[in-house]
Length: 441
Image (cartoon, rainbow, N blue to C red):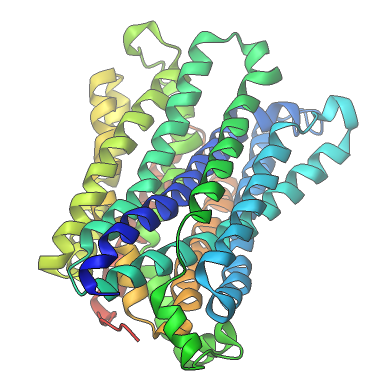
């Protein structure tokens, strides 16, 4: 196929890959939000009468998916590098569908007791495995078509990763609408479940779109040359484990702030501070509206970051984004203490727009540095180990700090800000030592 003939297929694959990425983060925010507003009440509330413990247990369930994502990256990276990018991505979407739909129909603790909690954690594990295999495959699949086109493709990298922003934004807006129009009882009973059912429908659409696309041309060439690795995930871990770990730390500043600072902590902080929202909305509804709009605007920043990386380089864009992010963590938190809803909206833009400028380069950056025979495994593991770091930060480090300091919601911002700033600086320093490469085969 001549390079110019790839554009049509790039558009179709971009839609299919971006759709899956959008759902991944739609569900991510749906689960993170549900953990604070719903799961801590209907699943963990009956186990303990202490709300803070119920919330902590609920957050552990959210973090569980992060902890198993590297296992999904290892498993599906192996399958994707051995048997194909496209076919493997059907399986990841099916797992994501099972997890999302299962959570949507899962009875509360009051109906089936401890079984509900066990099933909730099993379903989150299934989701984590599917998520673990999704991003590396989607990025490799799209970027390999782009590589064969022979043209600059930062725009396609940014477009794929903008699915993260739009998924977060749509999920937040859905919660904002529901919490503002439904009474508390209806929301806890069935309202939140609708959001997960919508996510399951998104997955089904994604499966249909992927059916209509082609396999990666570079993978087909590897098959023709019989240049398929026997154990790709294991081999790349042995050969380039340092690179994988460094790439994981390099994007930690992008992945950590939503579960660490934005949800559910920012909602709780705004509630305790008695912020006066616009439009007469309840505080949680207004904060979710802020998150939704900020994340969608962050999608534009993501696209611009991908485009800029063709001129500046992938690494330089991430260095800029991580440096700005390190500077704005405390201003983001301090704006909440103004209790001014417009300044809190500005805070939302501060936490999303600069950070997401760096995320636009990830599909191109992470796939370009690995040989084609290990690309799905290498890029996926690098990405999912970053998710593991986030799971450790939000599920282990931050709760431990709060337990040790006995911090309240009002005082915890000091520690959350310090942890967030340190993580951004770790990413910045790591990026200085990461080597930027452009490998096609």
